[in-house]
Image (cartoon, rainbow, N blue to C red; front, side):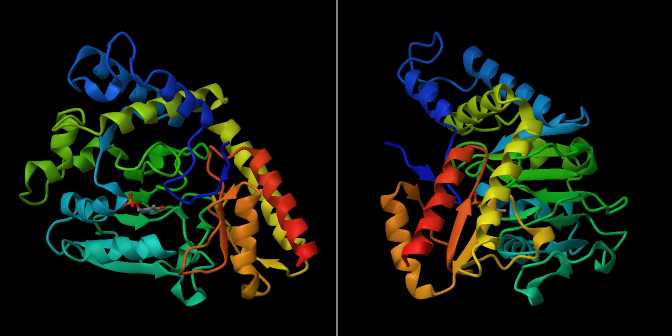
Length: 359
Ligand SMILES: *Cc1c(COP(=O)(O)O)cnc(C)c1O
């Protein structure tokens, strides 16, 4: 029996998506072969790929000025590839660092860009978001990079920062498709698929074409976004399985009522869990400033860390999977991506109450 999977990533996929993939695994469409075994340049695959892009565009209302790319390398590769493609040598790029992933992104960017930490909440141990007025943004910067949801620290922006004419670049790996977002406010959005889209090994990118055409330095073709865009993400063999599963997830999201419906469900789930933590009289604790709390990743500690092992063992036995927190933060973490239904969160809350009574 499947458990309630709170993994931060690779994370749970909608069960309906897995069942459909299982059903059509040996023979996909009329291909008499699986989707993994057919040419990515064949009619059937291209039609599926185009449908996936069309569904994503509809879900996020992506403006026609933006390209949608299905890439590889994980979000981490794009920490390096974004400055390669968007910055002239040493040109300033501003980074707003609100957690672990933002830190990693700025470290990779120093190789090609004059990467500058425009704001950081490291002093609060990444439990806050630095107010926009305090950011040191240069109007000549190549872009401003931020992480709308920090997966490890459980810190999320609840509005899009205004960076004027400087293009905004967002690592949306752990909150993409969790609610409607005004894509026209961004220069470039990228996301590793394994949190809210599909399997790892696929990266979704939505970017203004004009940014992809900057080409500030000679690069091998395979590293150039403009080449990937010109080839409709088929410069080389794409992650066909990942693209297919992403397409199934997009269709599932449409059937659920789209991103407005997901936002309501995600808020309900997060509210239920934070209420259980805050109402536990200090038995459980979440360190994040309430206005910056993430709806996707909820880290929490127990009042006595000596109980962690028992909590993890008993929760696993109760069918609540992967609650161990990241070592950087300790304690527990419950990830509540789109595929986690409210019933899973209710089961967790119930378990937490029961555990605190017994221990
Ligand atoms: C998981 C995650 C990453 C890393 O993704 P990889 O695909 O492993 O490179 C980067 N940024 C954020 C916000 C993440 O949640």
